[in-house]
Amino acid sequence: MAGMTVWLLAAIGLLPSLAVSAVMALRGSTADRLVAVQFCTTVAAFMLVLLTVAFDQPSFLDLGLLLVLVTYPGTLIYTWFLERWL
Image (tube, rainbow, N blue to C red):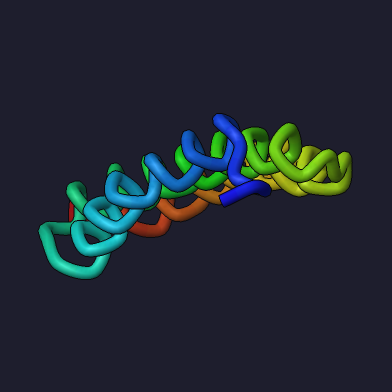
C-alpha cells in the first residue's frame, strides 16, 4: 500500500455514491433517472479531479472539465426531449 495516497482513498470513497446513483439511473421514474444521471456526472468529474492530484496527471483534470462542460447542455437537451413525460 505504498502508492496509496489520501487523494486516491478519497476517490475510492466516492465509488459507493457513484454506484448507487448509477443503479438509480437504471431503475426509477423518468425524473429520478434524470437527477441520478446528473449526480453521476458530478461525482465522476469530482473523482477525476481527485485522481488528477493522486496520480499527478493533468490530463485527468482536462477530462473532468470537459465532462462538466458537456454534461449540462446535454442535460438541457435531454430534458427538452423528455418534457412531455416529466
